[in-house]
Amino acid sequence: MGRIIGIDLGTTNSCVAYLEGSEPHVIPNQEGARTTPSIVAFTDKGERLVGQLAKRQSIINPKGTLYAVKRLIGRKYQSAEVEEATRRLPYSLSSAANGDVRIKVAEKDWSPPEVSAIVLQKLKEAAEAFLHEKVDDAIVTCPAYFNDSQRQGTRDAGIIAGLNVMRIINEPTAAALAYGRNRKNAETIAVFDLGGGTFDISIMEFEEGVFKVLSTAGDTYLGGEDFDQRVMEHIIAEFKETTGIELKNDKMALQRVKEAAEKAKCELSTAVETELNLPFISGDKTGPKHLVTKLTRSKLEQLCDGLLERTRGPCEQALADAKLTADKIDAVLLVGGQTRMPKVSQMVEKIFGKIPNNSINPDEVVAIGAAIQGSIIKGDVQDLILMDVTPLSLGIETKGGTFTKIIERNTSIPATKTMTFTTVQDNQKMVRVHVLQGEREISELNKSLGVFMLTGIPDAPAGTPHIDVSFTIDANGIVQVTAVDRASGNKQEVQITASSGLTESEIQRMIESARQYSDEDKARKDKIKYQTRLESLIAATQAAFNEVQNLIKPQDRQTFETAMDEAKKALETADSEELKIAYNHLDLASRNVSNALMQQFGTEQKKAEIPKPS
Ligand code: ADP
Ligand code: MG
Image 1 (tube, rainbow, N blue to C red):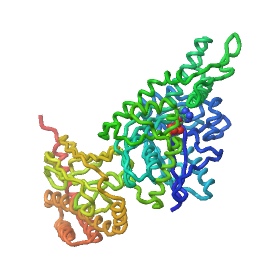
Image 2 (cartoon, rainbow, N blue to C red; image 1 turned 180 degrees about the horizontal axis):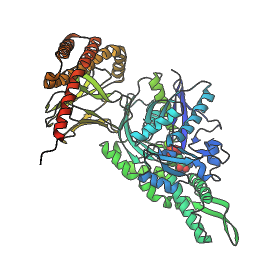
Image 3 (cartoon, helix red, strand yellow; image 1 turned 90 degrees about the vertical axis):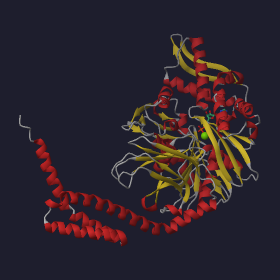
Image 4 (cartoon, helix red, strand yellow; image 1 turned 120 degrees about the horizontal axis):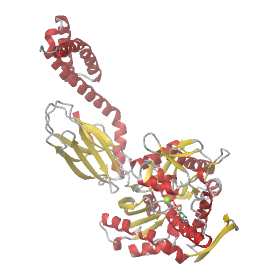
């Protein structure tokens, strides 16, 4: 296996890192920068620009410059979030046939993952140039709050970029991994991540190399861009007051104000006052107008007060979900560029009652954590496990003791999956749902997590009821299983704690033995499959035969009965091959039975159609 790089695919900036021995390093991009703006631009000349080059020309090409595309990943066009984005973003959005959001640029409808893939591709190429080797495998991070379709979109972006996405991990988990991997003592930490587009708060614990997310909360629509927006609105209002000119509808002016607002905001993290200077921003009868103004840190803080306050609720929620109080938190990590604003650390200090840790670089720590995770998967770094993906598949026992997976291992959590099952006997009144975890195809060889019964299924022939079995794993690794009978609406659910109680070596052993036995398991599973298939055919054709045997020629009747005997015998003894042959024989012999059945049905139809004499 080659190297596995770690990628932080950010809303605003992306970063790529790798491990040399046990030391993580950030890989500089082609321009020599350690982070790359997640921006793609299409110019009038048909050029495609990525990163800093795209950012630099955004002022003159607002409609063709795609930024904050991560906000659109995995979203439907008809959603509150996209509506909000449409109001803020200068480029056009539309709806795909399936309702997903599309970006209209360069005479094409782009899906958000396609655009993100262009950023990922740049990072991949930067890594290949820097490392002098081909790079295929990557760990890509996403906000802890991303749902399944957003995660899927992130993975798709990687695949489109030609990367083999080994795993999608949560950004705060990656940060905690980078911070905690060399720390010996058990710690409970909070990861406070305020980036350009999203806010995530996670409460985690780690002990002896085991990292566990206890709770997560956040706001998928709170980030540095909102701070920029506040500054922009202030500048625009002030400009209108002094000149009477409205800049709101001038896209080009807006882009310039946006850039200046962000720059001023960043400067105010270290300075207490800064100047904004935008010559020729507009004009009227009296000539060109320049925007020159001062902004102080205290004014910025006042403008953004409401935004800062919005971080409190999710923090309290996360603490409550983790059943902890702030004094139980050993350290608070600040992640994301916006946490460089002094008022943000002050807010964090107020919420958690302690000065946040400043030993990590908020712009790079996520990519570094992802690179460390890559080395764990590769086996270069041992004694570390991450608990925010399901380490083993989850599923239920199905007919013949086989194991049917519903959620595959390595699925990022939170996740929900539903599969529909049915009964195996006529008028079966209840089903036993046996929940298991593992990789083996035979259920008894996996770890049993629990059993429950779904009762009250109305009488129906075998195979007709629809029983929806859903698995939900939330951000805490808690699995909830529900079984619902569609006809009666009867519902049963249980909560199970997944992935706890299994050590890394147990997991490895299970994976290893699964590999070793997979052929053997497959043969057994095949046999059960063919047996089940043959059983159903026997039942169906026997019933039909009983109904219409008088209409069948004696010779055909004989053939059918012979095939039926053979089939019943095959069920007792035969292997997969013999089961298949018996199935084919019976299937063939039963054609005359179905013909007779059709004939009878046709006669009945005709009878029914004859009008009553009046
Ligand atoms: P993302 O994870 O969303 O890609 P980043 O972690 O790169 O975001 O953070 C980007 C945000 O951080 C931007 O809104 C940027 O303006 C802001 N930012 C970067 N540096 C500073 C700074 N020194 N002070 C305040 N905000 C900053
Ligand atoms: Mg980030």
